Length: 151
Image 1 (cartoon, one colour):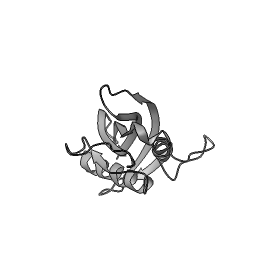
Image 2 (tube, one colour):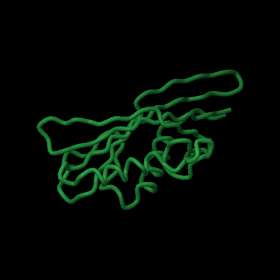
Image 3 (cartoon, one colour):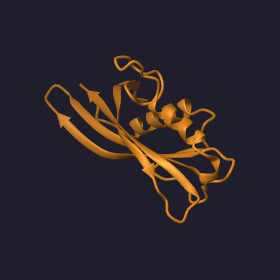
């Protein structure tokens, strides 16, 4: 059994996000966007994601790592809500009805971790609007819990 590699999981989440949001974003960044990144009228939203919380659960037979990822999506207020709504839909995914597994997005989706082929199960946890005072930006956040199993 090998140890968990959070960077492999981060890479998997980023690759999945870029693929699922094809044509809907103006960049996907881990932890923070570059300081030069600004929301602009007539541009697409950009996405920042990061591992917000970790919890390990180990036994002699295997280990679980639960990671909650937060996705923050930013856009210019003059672009309206449609671009943000399209990104929300793509991040949430296509698991419908509830018993089905998604083939896109992060709610009810299984991913194979880049680098070690472990299965990661993803579930939506929470979300909301972000208010940014003195800014032309509007946005939202979504949180997804991933369960990464080894052993």
